[in-house]
Image (cartoon, rainbow, N blue to C red; front, side, top):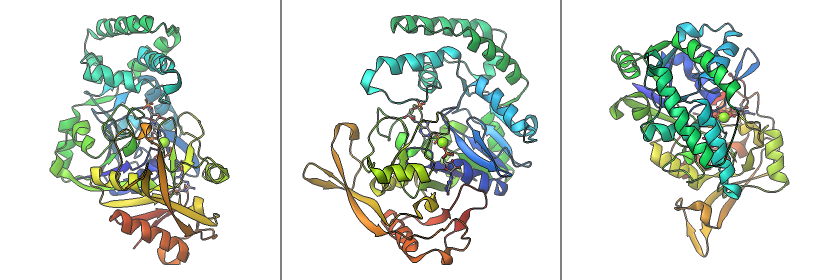
Length: 421
Ligand code: GDP
Ligand code: IMO
Ligand code: MG
C-alpha cells in the first residue's frame, strides 16, 4: 500500500521534517511531482539540510528513494544535492532511483521562466525561477526531454532542437541571457546522471508494492498551489494533490491508503497571490521572526497570517485527507491571542467555500479569537501535558475540519513530534 504526505496550504508546511520522521516505517519514499522549486528542510544529527530534488528518506540507510515520472528534474541541482548528502555519509548511488519518464529541466527552461516573469510586470507569480513552468509546458506540449532519453544516441540532437525552439521564444520575448556556463555545468551533470539507477518507475514501484513493501509518497508545494485547485494563476505548474500520486508514480488509486496532510498551526505563503488571512501588521512580523519564515529555496521572506480553515477544509476535501500533522505549533507559544479564519466575507455574502478567482475578489476573513497559552511547549512529549488553551485550539480545528489532528510538531528537530491521542 501507499501512504501520502502532502502540504495542505501554500507550501513549506514542514513536509520534509515529517517525511524524514516517518521514513523508518517505510521501505520506499517517492517524489511524484514538482521539482527544484521545492525546499524541504531536515535536521540530521543536529545539522540543517535542505533537499530540493532528492526524496526526504535519503538519510535512512535502508530506505529506497525514487524520483517519479511526475517530477521535473534539474540535473545541475541533482548533482549538487548528491554531493551535499554525500558529505553526510549517504551512499546515494545505492538508494536513489530515477524514473526514465521524469522530464528534464534544461538551462533555457530557466531562462524562459525568467523571461515569462519579467514580461508579466506587476502580475508576477513570484516563481522560484527554477524552470518548472516551462518544463511542464514542454511535457504537455509533447516537446520535452526525459531522463530515459539520456541513454539514447540522439539525445544531443534532440537537446539542440529544443534549445533552438526556446531561443526563438526568448527572442520573441526580447530576453537575452548568456547560458554558456549553465550549459557546461548541465552537460557535466548529465554525464553524472547517466551513471544513476534509471528505472522503469511504474514497474519498479508496483513490484515493490506487490512484494508487500511500504511506500510513502512525498508531496511538494501545497494544495493551494495546485494548478487546478489552487489560487490560479498564482500557482505552480503541477497537480500537487493526492490524485497526482497515481499519475506521478504509476500507482492505481486503490493502492493509496493514508493521506497525511501537513499544515502549519498558522499560515504562510511565498510569492504573489491571494492569502485572505494574511497579516500586514506587527503580529505578522512576529510570526515571521519567531517562525524563521524565509524561503528554503529562494530565501525570500514568507508572508504570514492566521490559519485559514476554509482553505484547509477545501484541501482536506480534494485530497481525501485521513490524518493531519500540525506543524510549528511552538511558534505560537508566546502570543497572547490567536485567531483562526472560519468564513470568508465577500461583499455582503458570508461563505465557507473557496471561491473561483480568489485573486479578483476582496475577501474579508471572519476570525474567531482564542486565548494564547504563553508556555514553552518545545520540549513537551506527551499530548496530555500540553497547555489547556493549546488543547482547545487544536480541538476546535479538529472539529471544524472533521479530520483528526494526529500529530503536533513542536520544533524543527526530528524528535519534536507529539502523538495527539
Ligand atoms: P517543506 O517545504 O514543507 O518541507 O517546509 P520547509 O522546509 O520549506 O519549511 C519549514 C520550516 O519550518 C523549516 O525551516 C523547518 O526546519 C521548520 N519546522 C518544521 N517543523 C517545525 C516545527 O514544528 N516547529 C518549528 N519551530 N519549526 C519547524
Ligand atoms: P515546498 O515543496 C512554497 C510557489 C512560488 C510561486 C509559485 C510558482 O518547499 O513546499 P514555481 O517555481 O513553481 O513556478 O512557483 O509557487 N512555490 C512554493 N512555495 N513552497 C514550495 O515548495 C513552492 N514551490 C513553488 O513561490 O509563488
Ligand atoms: Mg519548502
